[in-house]
Image 1 (cartoon, rainbow, N blue to C red):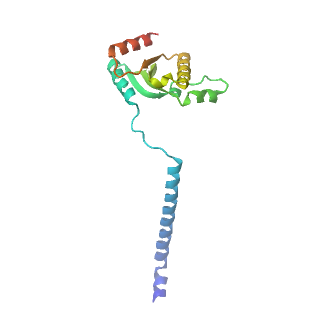
Image 2: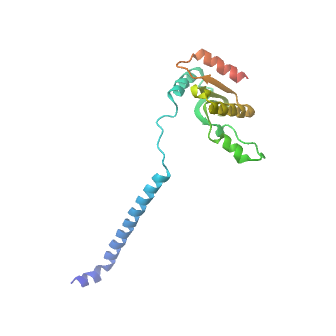
Image 3: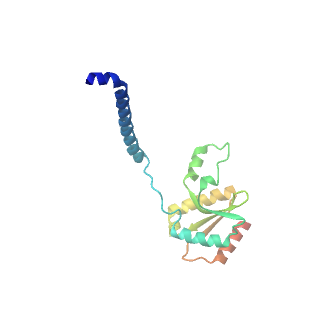
Length: 173
């Protein structure tokens, strides 16, 4: 009796077995890929874009900036602000020098979304020799590119009038 059933339903049994094999392969492949991916991509979400000091400064910067004319972007990559001149030898070496550096805040003209002022919030870490070298390099790069840069000392509180005056002077040159 069983051989007769097998003869009649062999194709159903074959399909069920094939589907089972496919599911087994999917499961083992998916598990291997998943753990492999987590090993290759060890990233986690940062909780905040800015430090507390930067967030405090950003709030005052928003107060003194005309939002109808300007955008304020935090943590702008230096490589998004400058590029290496065409025809420069060692293009990639020069590109690498700006690639992993960022500017604390950049003021952009709203219509064209053009950078008009870079702002660096200088805390106590800027007294270290390595930070001074980095700051001097960034200052030089932005000066060469023609983007004004304003350094502001990190403080517990900021006077909006003083900040507005400093921004105005930096924009005038």
